Length: 370
Image (cartoon, rainbow, N blue to C red; front, top):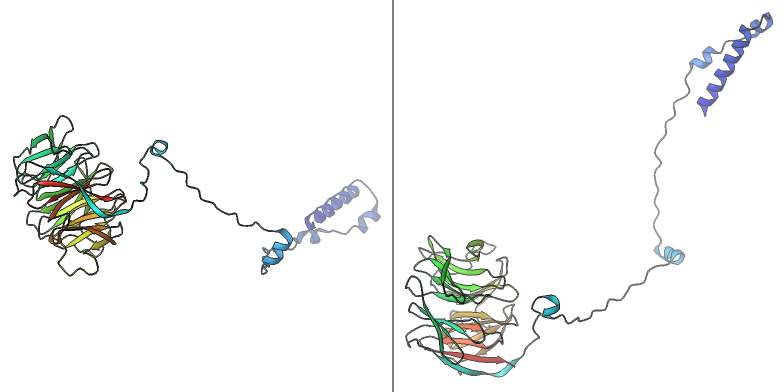
């Protein structure tokens, strides 16, 4: 505003000077006073500061009264009942209850001698793969009829066997340090894992199609679980968060199974414990028997899991099978009235338990759910 006023004065002075130049009147010249000194002074400098915002405490009640507010909206849940067809995947099975007294529903005779220790794996509800102390692996139907026999490629006994999602047989050959797959239908044997300095012991196939293999090094001082996708090593599980070994190194007996929640369950016979880690390999819990169990009196060997996420492990020392929930809480026994020195376990799709016994040639199928 000041600048506009100054400019206006300058224009007025120039106009007056032009009039003087164009006239001859002495009186106008004598009356003229120069204003140059006034124009030589610049206008004062203006300093503008940023205004500050002063807050006041908000009165919420006053705002509610003046504006109003949104009320909470109730949330209702609804069971949608998705099926396998609608989701393209297996839906969770309904909760099942134990029967009061487990029942032996069949005894399957095999061609193994009484001195054989038999391993077993369910290929389907209708067929079982078995192995013993020899090099021959045998496939049986529920009636005990021999469907197929196949020898290990090395002629040595397999340490363990497992069935895959694609109905193929996997076995470990500790002498040859390999894990092999017997192809479905063709029964051709293919090596998928070959180790150096380590030997494979027990194996299981996961829901994703990976293999989990318990391996031990040559001096028998280290044991770890390794996950393989085909021939590629994807994961190693060996130590807890404190850097201590998860598994004992005293013997070979470390059966393995994956639970439906993707936990990895290992029965560590030498440690008298079941060791369970999550999918990432972090220790979830160690089970050493019910609270009343005395130290060292629990002898876990075979281990499996069922559709309810329950963990079943054979207790060789006490002629019974322990059933735990997926958090390691003891639920019940299947005891000596049905078993004598249970060894290897698996379950079929109906949650029937398949059990072999130490130095016995028969395989038992036990019903324990309603």
